Length: 156
Image 1 (spheres, rainbow, N blue to C red):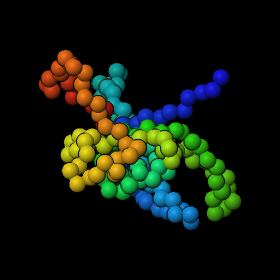
Image 2: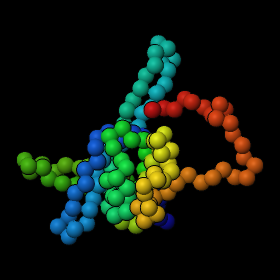
Image 3: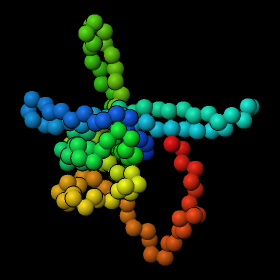
């Protein structure tokens, strides 16, 4: 029996994405996404918050282009990929481990969630820019939700 390795995150980009190229010319994007969890402490009634940082690595050439053109520090994104842990040796010869969400060459997706684009294509973009990206699907026929009925308690 095989397992499922799929990670879906919704959060904010923590630093400007880094775009680099391998010796073979393949472009790779690296950035971090912060996810927040908020709750009210039962004992004290105080609001608590925990922030988790996630390393994102994008090998999908089309998604690298999207990241390069439209993703900045603070951008709100939905990122879907696979969790991978890799081993490396630091400058002191100590073996280290890094866990990352990887968007491979033919998998993964990024959805832009900022209010400026709200997950839609910016006017200056072409369809070729969005190969491999996904967008919100229209609501099913007859499904009507008023904006004031939506829960505004977003955890980040």
